[in-house]
Image (cartoon, rainbow, N blue to C red; front, side, top):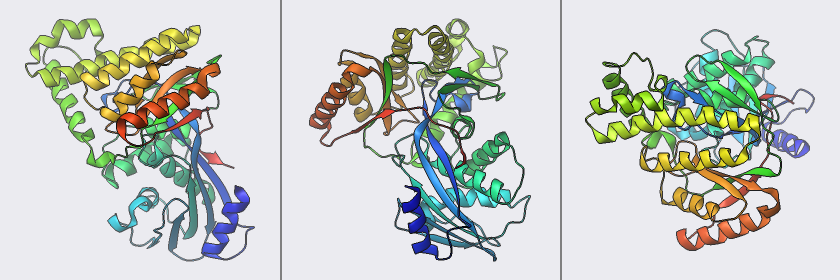
Length: 384
């Protein structure tokens, strides 16, 4: 792949190959803890072996040229005038990184070619992947000496402020900070974290892409965030809490009566119980109790479907079909919802049957085929 991308880079930008540098950032899967990051609680993501490559070469002027093997449109900007431009589409994500770095550092121009194998719009953090690969590349090329946590925070700030997506920090943190063969047990408010070994024995995580695309900033993501803030405002009048995730399921059950709106109450319930499921999932992984882990995944999906209402018929169908297969311990949607992907914990011995059967039954019901992948654990963002 490296030689093919290098050839494509030279076709697009000319020049010599010697000064090209190569970077990679993964996508991420959140095992459990959905819609918890912006509620300040615990999540359990890991880096996938799919991701985004960036080939980059410094120029001697103030021009930056963007290209991608995944999209036909290219973009060219001056470092003296960076602003969001709908016509630049995907390139706004790396542009935002450059814009925010330039608040503190003066850069020179460069040419960059991106190549990703994360399904776009699938909920596997293709945007955070392109942000972090850009951030690490600029940091290394210009010797800026940011540590990875700083780059993670900068990438979240860029997506919030430059691209207009009010996301939490989980995606960028997982993409930047992941370690091979581990998940990250992350507290999204304090950013305290620890690495949890992912020893799944005879089981693999299967990514099930519904092939229903979604645009996060056009979804009800910001609406859910506002509903959580409303629930927090109500509950904090009677409970001493800073976040919904400060509540245990037991304390929530005792005080939920003060939330008069049943919809707002359901949103809060999901957050509190999902946060608790993350803690239980870490215990299950540590004990090698994969049956318990699978059951937690399935409970998470039910909560996301009924209480948080961010699932859809495609996600529900693919989870339903997964759970019908002997050897599948659990399944749930992952990501923001309204399309994208689900995950399943599946015994290695039935993977071929699982993929064939789930794909066939989903296509019969929905009208088009999904895409299923055996997911391996990858590295965080880095120069390669």
